[in-house]
Length: 383
Ligand SMILES: Nc1nc2c(ncn2[C@@H]2O[C@H](COP(=O)(O)OP(=O)(O)OP(=O)(O)O)[C@@H](O)[C@H]2O)c(=O)[nH]1
Ligand SMILES: [Mg+2]
Image 1: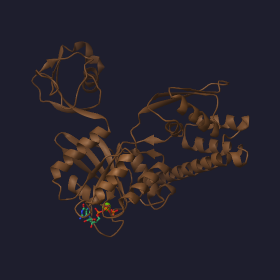
Image 2: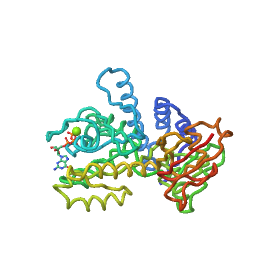
Image 3: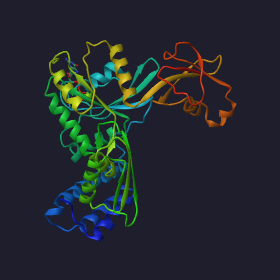
């Protein structure tokens, strides 16, 4: 039921939306909550706000603790083309994977909670280099501060991709549920973001929603009412549901993710069950066991990570030089490549651009600045 909020509370909600730092947001949320009348119609809203306040408080305390403490570090500086964090329950095989696929040498053990700090390793395949980071085990209640849960979730927030490590020999659906719900409680959603949301405040304009179909528009209007949000113009581009838009407004992040199902050698039968559940969440699952040839697994995983990130790898050279690998976003054009490797000052001096590609019947071809590039293209830029 929409919460019929007094004008004072609505004005205070706008302060929440305008807050820039977590501390400002926390104060604004507390102020807002104090102005929401307590009755049945606002129970859901008050619960949501209390939850948000609790999450923010923990985040702020966590930051303070990290700043003040000169102890073991949970932060891993990014290197390589992307950082992928391995998140899974204890004993799920995270260290085994890291050791099999990278140069890292973590301790592998049957006893639980063997890995106590994040461990990085570099996954190299051909010209692709992806940093894998083993996160210490996630447990139920991580998002509420259990064990090192909040630090693990912060690692996941900072990574480019999340790899869910799920042990096939022990209730894989339970593990999937725990990981997905802990991440979601920490504001991390595991689906590619296919939309953008812009919110503008305009006094007296009511709720105006642009870019959603009528059903979703109506739903979004109700959800915004429940949150006490009015006088806003919400502009949505791309594919989004009303819930997606509300999550975006509440600050949820979307992270590309994939699933690695370990111990395939001992519990092969569970893979199909897990794969089905992953499909419903739009996650792709890959089997793992140390019996799978290392190079095949590295290739498949690198490709999957690049795809999840919408990245392509192209090679660039000047006439007579050795090509160097460069990552670009999918859909990039020749101009994007030149800007990335040479900067835009040089643009006027480009004489020609030749491209060798398996998309072409005849190679090489001279391309214009607006021509699209594809994965594996070799580009020669003459200046
Ligand atoms: N048969 C088999 N055993 C595996 C596989 N992966 C891991 N194991 C075993 O599972 C146990 C736990 O492996 P680890 O790699 O240490 O697990 P972890 O997720 O790093 O565990 P923590 O760091 O303690 O959270 C070890 O005894 C491994 O040998 C696999 O694919 N097949
Ligand atoms: Mg480990």
